[in-house]
Length: 176
Image 1 (cartoon, rainbow, N blue to C red):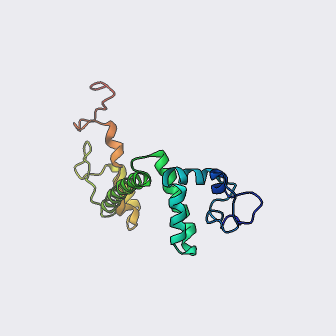
Image 2 (image 1 turned 90 degrees about the vertical axis):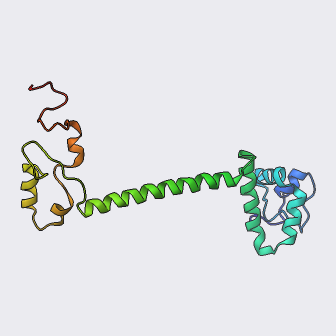
Image 3 (image 1 turned 120 degrees about the horizontal axis):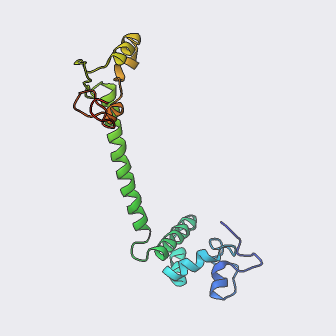
């Protein structure tokens, strides 16, 4: 509970409603004078009478959670009058689904790398799918998991070469 009903200044609700804050004020523990905007938002969306009825109908140990929920929803309704916090939740759920799909795809790629299922690239003068540097590195690291997981050269190495396997670089002219 944020403040006592016996404090020297009235709670934010009583101050907003321009009334005297009584010792048994239902709003005082949940709308302290330091947070006037909290009550103003809740009052604008739900009304002081409805909030008072709600707080009187629920158990005292549930009131703080109820006020926090009302304050959150009121702030969300002020930002998005149509959807309120449901709009924010929906956006976050879509983001979680998108990130989950991305994570699943990344895990699948990782599994393919781990199983050495990546396609073998053919290089000029090499029909085995690995160039001489790659073969030397694998024979040097034979028996290690490094040679089982990585293919040499990595796929992004080939991105600058054309696919004609003529040995010509696309940035250079023919035979230069």
